[in-house]
Amino acid sequence: MHVVFVSKSNFGCGNFHTIDRIRTGLTKVAPHLTTEHCDLQAARHLVSRNVDLDPNVVVVALNLSRCAFLTSIFPPLHNLVLICGGSDLNEDTKSAVQRQQMSELIDRSCPIIMACSVQFHSVSLSVLFLRTLFVKLSEAVLANRDTALSHQTEAMDFVEQKIGLRLSRFVLFVGRLRPLKDPLFPLQPFLGESFGE
Image (cartoon, rainbow, N blue to C red; front, side):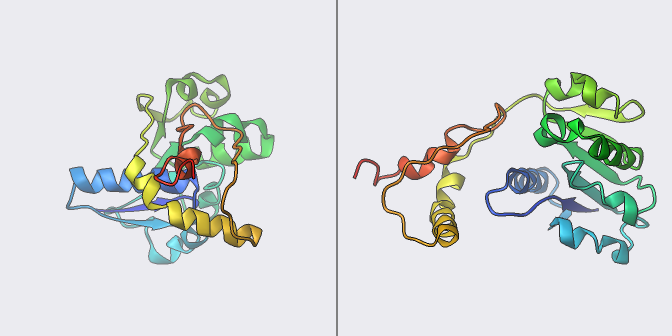
């Protein structure tokens, strides 16, 4: 069995890290599975690999609105699993166009996986999911300090490259943190050994 994960792959993107955690957990409990991650652009070429015809391939897509293009390149997939994220609930369902695209994708999928009961009971989403099998996960936040710190240098290099100057001391204000995300994660650069220098 081969699992193809489809999501955004930008550095620091929550979707990418969610998929990475799922892949890691999946390979621990089922080491015989093979997995790969396709960013949104690469996923558009999955049709040339006939993954919709191969019963040994499962496509797992995170964020319904961003992955809605799958409806235009695949016939109805019995091996498509959708993971509904916070953006789906908090942002994308407010747009009639995005709701329609999400509905079309849901019609072609198998189960829908949601991260919390708020999503499950949301009226705005339940209208979309009437004909679909639900899988509901218990609410949890997984914050791995070692993983966060291992990306600290890469994150700082990325920020410095974007703004075009070297940072020594700075204050970071982060908005729109949702309850499902760890509010201490953006503060990790301040919590190391150099804190207070």
